[in-house]
Image (cartoon, rainbow, N blue to C red; front, side, top):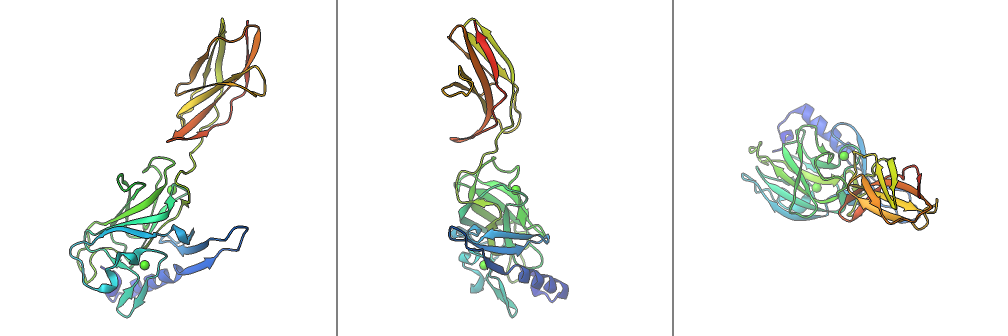
Length: 301
Ligand SMILES: [Ca+2]
Ligand SMILES: [Ca+2]
């Protein structure tokens, strides 16, 4: 349903202003590598956003139109929702927007991975002065879906923060019309385009590193050395402890533990050991380390 088709002048003015500001395509200056084309738009809260053109949906995984739908062939092909926004008003109709139908479901694939960056991370270009309620979810495998929330009213951007596992990138977006607006000539949401605002070309994104820890105790008992460090509460999956007879830790003995305490056994007598520890974060096989603690020395007698 496109509200603007009713002859409400102020809504029309708003839509025209929106579609004008949303149509600036420019080419970034040529750098050492081939420059990537970017697309700049003003979001519905008035903020200017620039994304790579490749941050827009690149292919359709599936589309199930809602019921009721319509039979206007200008709005039936789900590929209409791919690429940069291209919505154009044509008389009392338009081109460039897909009609979802009440309860329609659209799954789109992206060449880039959508990640949690500053502010909103996904943006849905729905046409019309009133954004109809559409549920937005992301997935990395088309099996597990994470709900980001709903686009409605002036809220067309959605934030991954707190809704997905940290450090994960997503290359699929699923839009589901809630069926809240089943009436009119074009029932349900009208989707022009979808893009990631914060994206990366790599599947594994940067894991947040934990903070610096410090050695709370480093005690020798015979030839055994027990080291305990201060716990790090955020972004921490474990600790890496190192001891070395060389202050530069050139060939250290390393122990890793999910706990903040380890023991090194059978150490050399009459020797001074340097001790340090750092916290780490982990996702899959990727690790991200915090800074090394200050070094302590312990002499085995
Ligand atoms: Ca975010
Ligand atoms: Ca379009």
